[in-house]
Image 1 (cartoon, each protein chain N blue to C red):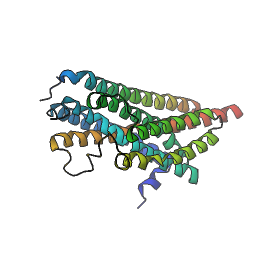
Image 2: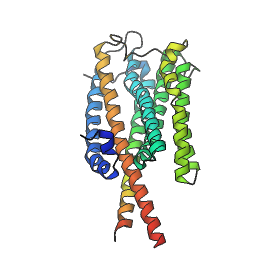
Image 3: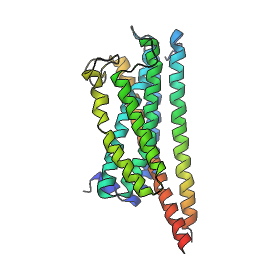
Image 4: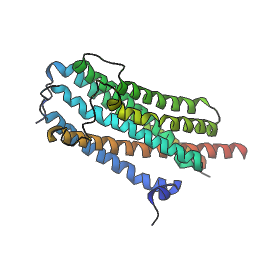
Length: 48
Length: 240
């Protein structure tokens, strides 16, 4: 079973995981929003 | 049979392929990351590094991907320069922010691992410095593209810069062997260097990062192709 008790090293381990999670969340949201926004714009402009 | 790169070189075929491949890779990445994190958090503390060994499961994949993404950026830039291919240029442009983010993560998680193990957040060690140079190449690529108004000229200049930056990759990889370094050598490429209890979550996390990069890269290339279509359509509408 996972044990999230990292003792004296918790101050280094948790920030590493939290920063990683935040960066990935930013990449996912940013990439999807960028693609969706340009797709909508392209479709609107190409509509006759 | 058509080889995969030739098949994907057609933007329409790429859009059809990436439409299902991107979500599939995303689901694979989530499943692999869940398994890797579960096993990684369940792994026992290392006899020397204690609980900090768990930073390895996010630091090493980020460092490997930082270099792998740069290879993708270099190959895409070369294809864009030689063949002036739209999709290759979009692929290079889409890879750069992902590579910069992964290199940033490698540096930050490495620093958070180095402080309790080495007693320093940062040392001007050959490995750390060469990874910092890699990060600066990514930033320079993005800045150069953004700073030139003519998109074609900006893409060409940035592609040349990306190719120059390829020289740094062997320096990053071999730095721990060429110079005395605080940073340890490769554990993943040395047989038996890691016991399975650490090796399995590390490989799972590396594959998760790889699949995650694949999914995000495809999404970003799609976004870039849509952007270029929108701008071309806006230009046509303005001329009409």
